[in-house]
Length: 254
Ligand code: IPD
Ligand code: CA
Ligand code: CA
Image (cartoon, rainbow, N blue to C red):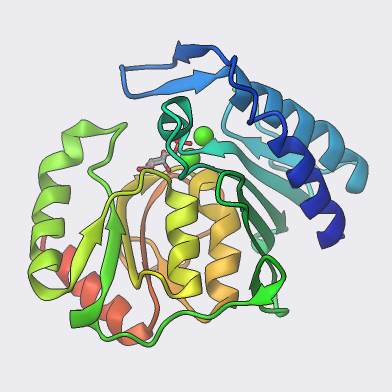
C-alpha cells in the first residue's frame, strides 16, 4: 500500500505548484489557509478513502474529524503554509496512517526540493527510496529546529527561554517554518534536535513514524509517548542521551 500512498501524494503535489492560489485568514494574521491547502486535502481524502474503505480522517482543514475507525489517515495538506504562500521551499504534504492507537505509516513530501520521506512501522525510513538514519552527533554539536509557537504567541516568552538555554549548550538553532520537514531533517541526520511548545497532530503524525524508523525518538514535553491525535508539545532527538538533555532543559522551565 505504501507505493500507492506515495503515488497519491506525488499526484497531489501538482495541485500545490499552481501559482494562482488565494489566501484567506483563519485566525490572527499568522494563521492562513490557501486554496491549494483545500484542494490538496480534498484530493488526498478522496484518493485515500479508496485505498482503505471505511477509514477515518483527521485533517487540518476541516471542522469534523472521524476518529472512531480502525484505520485513520492523519493529514496536513500543506505543512508550512506561510512558507508556501511566500514561495519559500520548506513546505510539505504530510500523510500518516494510524491503526487503532498506533502510527504505522508516514509520507512527507517536499515538492520544491523533490524530497520524499516515507516509513512503515518496522520497515525502516527512506528518502527518495534510500534508507536514512539519524546522525550520531553529540548534544554540544547538535542543531535544533524550533519555533516560538506561532499560533500561540502567549507561549513565546517561555519558548524563548528554553531556546536560549538550549542554544547555549548546543551548536545552533534553525527556524525553517515547517514542523514535518524539520522532524524529517532529524531523521536523515541534517539536524539533531527538535522542540515545539505546541503542535497539532497533523504537524507531527506522519513524520513521527519516519523519525522513529530512522532510529530517532520523540516524546511530549514530559517524556510521554505521542499518540498522533492530540495537540501537544513535541521534543525529538537523534539519541536517547540528547533527548534526555533537551527534556531536562524543558522540564526546568515549564
Ligand atoms: C505550522 C508549521 C510551523 C510550526 C507550527 C505549525 P502549518 O504548520 O509546521 O513550522 O511552527 O506549529 O502549525 O500551519 O503551516 O500547517
Ligand atoms: Ca502543519
Ligand atoms: Ca497546514
